[in-house]
Image (tube, rainbow over all chains, first blue to last red; front, side, top):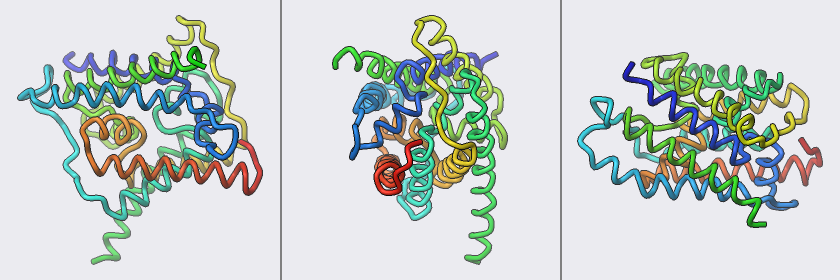
Length: 142
Length: 140
């Protein structure tokens, strides 16, 4: 079972999200509400996480391969196109409407709220739909 | 003030360490939207499933071990949860990532593409909350 680190890293990631306050939709919406009673705490979640990744990523990517896999699987796409910006905009609107991005939504399954299942089911549907839209748009372009 | 920052900072560092441990061991980017979609679309379902089981269990364990209270359930009608989820799903797949993949891992790799995506979804989130709370005047 060479994939066991995925379970451990998932546990750490979920614990980090729950500890940080990212799974609390009120806190997330308070963070995004810069014109209201702004709650800056979640800036420090991003800050703490990015400090670690900025420091460790260059060091790890110097290795010829990861410890338990044949090669690194990294995104190859480099261009900033309309698709990226449109997608990020739609995602940001959804995030601001309810307060969940994908990680905290999935972690919150542990809290047993029905609305979380509604959110996640529709998120999955949206991901499927985005794939269908891509097929349609590329046909129109042809 | 400082007390309230301890949990966010330690939580953020844990998220960073988890992302780096996944990169160091399996060579994968800890982008949750991509891991989740890949569980259904494939390939490599094994590690994705294990990661997501860990994600949910890690959240539950954190509250039971530390005694940190579970957050109140989100307020708002179910149709809003459905609409928000749909937009998050379409947007993260179209934009190839979310807060974790672009925001935490991508910026860590100094990817300009991820930086652009992160700035865009943060701005869109801020504008959305501004419109719902201060223009329309509903508070979810």
